[in-house]
Image 1 (cartoon, rainbow, N blue to C red):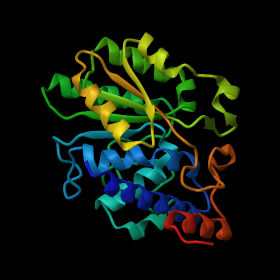
Image 2: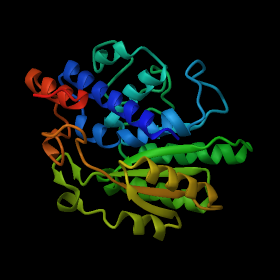
Image 3: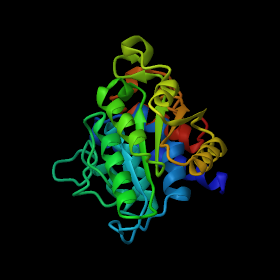
Length: 273
């Protein structure tokens, strides 16, 4: 694993997040920026995928359960070669294949249409069970938000995955601490998330979600677990990489204006003020 390369990819993805949401004048930059290390790790190191053949039957699957953070996924797909990065500025435009939430029928590389919170992990469970039933070796990775874990459907899916012993499924939780209305612990406290997953029969790991070595170690550990799905709780920073967005819930679903965009891009590109 080339950590420096992954860091460069993460930075490029973050730039794409800022540029695309600014062009759309809407979107969800805060939670997109917090999950970028995981997205870059999966798409540029871990997952067995082929941009030239997005529907390859034996590919690994990724489900963005927190579908509103599509800007992170789109930017990763673009930089991975599924489509041109120049298309990112078409985010949320009428007729674009880059809508506000992922669309598996329109966007190359998107494995599941998501948006309604809780449905993504449920679909991921179905994919993992399908792989088991058909003796396929591909794995399923899904990413949830911490606020999403307030949804009852998440825990129905957790019960399902444990019951069917889906050890080919890894669920990551982007625990940045904030949702649209404020701190998750103030809105509807879902903690301790790791203990909740464990109580449903999952193997759980808690890590720094911005540390590639920690992410890789968690995945390698998950690969050794038999007859249990794995949940990786990633402690992250909302708005990571852009100083005025970090740990500020107000950037959950607001795009930058021109001046803010310039500042954000300068920070990400290392341009001195």
